[in-house]
Image: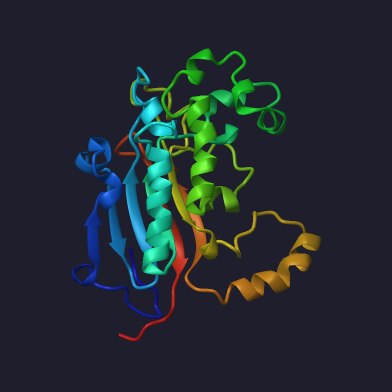
Length: 262
């Protein structure tokens, strides 16, 4: 975090920090005992830092991640937590962290080898996108169940994938590279597992890069109007071009907030 030239951000000592999902996490040892979630209250928005449980190499936690009929389901519970947080605090929410899911075909390097990548492949039902990719279909974070559950979670929580909102067609941009094989990073064989999500109210002005002049003209008035709404997401990025010191690259965003005096 850093301040803009227009004013400072609150000092860490002045911010309220809570761990876990509160009552929603009760009776759920994964949500309540594994240190998966921290919420920081800023004046204009709530920031949720999250490390979503990995389904595991044996996929034992897959039902916990995605089965909304189970007693405990992370995706459903997390969406409810974000929604309740926004309603109770009366301010939008930003979620950042390892979401352990690649929901778009562009987010999975293996998909790039398919002859109909990306548009033709993306138009198929998720379950039909794995032709010749049996291993990927059974890999944590890439399973059809997780990829189908992810957009449901976004809708239920009222969240937007900020990077994809700005860069819907971006390919070859990943946040994770396996350390098991030394060639993954040099050959850009990665996954996009890490996200910045934000409440839809913070994203109404976001538009894809490379928009045509006609589209620009059509939406100019709406864009100017939405820019008056604060806070808002200005940019979303993945810092994947520098040398990585770990298997994950940093992700981040720029947020415009109301100006405050010193």
